[in-house]
Structures are given as C-alpha cells and as structure tokens.
Length: 88
Image 1 (spheres, rainbow, N blue to C red):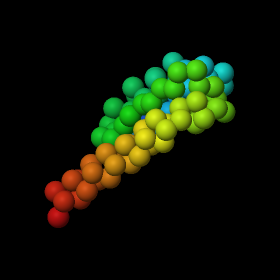
Image 2: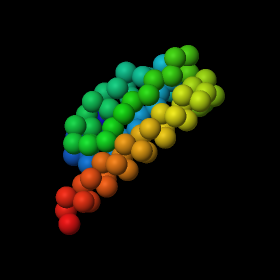
Image 3: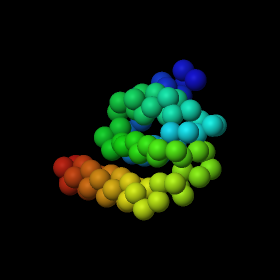
Image 4: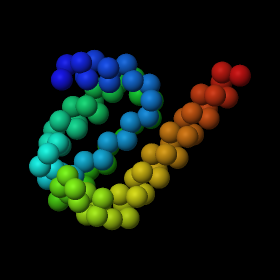
C-alpha cells in the first residue's frame, strides 16, 4: 500500500529482505519495490533465492541463506557502532 511505501521511505532501521524467486504468496517484484522504497535505511540488503517458494526459501537457500543473514547482522552492527562512536 502507499502508506507502507511512505513509512519505508522514512525507515532508518536495518532492512534485510530475503525472497524466494518463486514465492507464490509475496511476489518478488513486491519485495523489490519495498526494498527500493527504504531509501532512508543505512543498512539494507536483499537476498534472492532461486527456486525458493514462500515456505521453503530457508531450505533451498541452504548455507548461503544463513550466511546472508549473518552478513546483514555484521554490516548493520558495524554501521550502528560507527554511528554511535560519532555521536559521543
């Protein structure tokens, strides 16, 4: 909805979108639109899983799925630490 897009444009939190490219519930094009709308987020990433559907993306993504989450957490933590150090 337009309200969600509007709120995402103001988001300053980290955003980690993981999408199965065969998701039958949330179409990948919708996830991409939400990702693109989050212009204010300093830490964001999108991980696309080929062949992944809504309920099996975690399985089809395998180790790379887990690594993408870890990578996001590491980057977001680093960005937060850098932001906190400049505030003090």
